[in-house]
Image 1 (tube, one colour):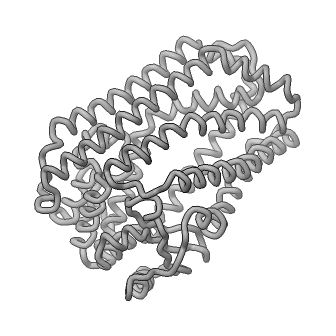
Image 2 (cartoon, rainbow, N blue to C red; image 1 turned 60 degrees about the vertical axis):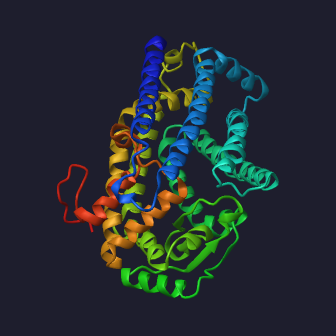
Image 3 (spheres, rainbow, N blue to C red; image 1 turned 135 degrees about the vertical axis):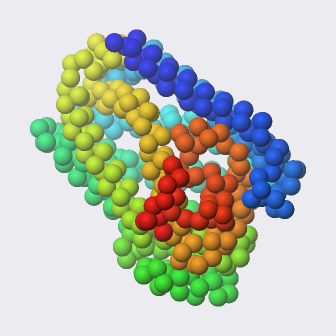
Length: 425
């Protein structure tokens, strides 16, 4: 059975690498062509810069992926999981503290492996292309904060879940699901006040007249927003963005100072209108419902599969603790979910198209949204020539050229198959 699982794993890896190869080959073949939507905005020199940036990030990502997969093979199929599992059991026989030790060592090992890649991306690639503004001291401070937050929240989640399992062995799957749902909502509430300010300085929007325009836009959309802030994203990077954070009464709008610097007020309003579209079209709620439904079903299946005697044999082990079984089941779940990736990507792209159309209708200026996308792509060096198959498989947003063309030429209300939809905005 372990041979079949290993073969499935190799098929998943081969498919992923083949798609990356297709994408880079497509960029190499078409990367010197300026799309009509970017004529007069991007010249051949800038287009070459986009291609070089994409290739460099892809090469680093490929090396990181290969290294991670080698560790996965050695850990799961090379017997290291069994050795590690046995060592943890000798250190602690407690379900709670043994589980915390088991999960935390793996979490810290993953962070340790990621550190050199993060350093290289920030201080080599991002520096080379003019994005990085972060000092090594700030990078290290952010890392330590992230480790501290992950440790505190991770300990709370692991210990709480294991306590539920220990005290309700027959129904833990239901109570763990309930706890995860409540914890997620809790994080949504506290994140704007506790977590995000640890990394960014939030202050009122400084651009004269912009906040008033934002509030008028929100009122027109029938959406109540507590605050409109700008953050000092430029301390870390010149990449630009805007987002909604929080839920309910703590919902707020956050604008990167880099976005405010790069765009006109009309373009910023169009970007925010797009985000409003996600709320008004209930994309956020639908995504939460879908995620929680899958988690509910997944935990119910996990409850039964974790007690199956044949589970350790799926990777060639004779026996495994509860924690090791969770790792094995998580790995198998990733193989099962991989073929569904295009479906979830399609759902995300559909939502993004609806949000684009909503923004166009709300502002009455589709060109403002199109112009904002052009600037975002130009300033962030976005790949303008993704392979169609790669995009359908992995892209959560439609390729930017398609989005701009739809806004300028085709209008809204077209799905992935090109047919009109009345609820598209």
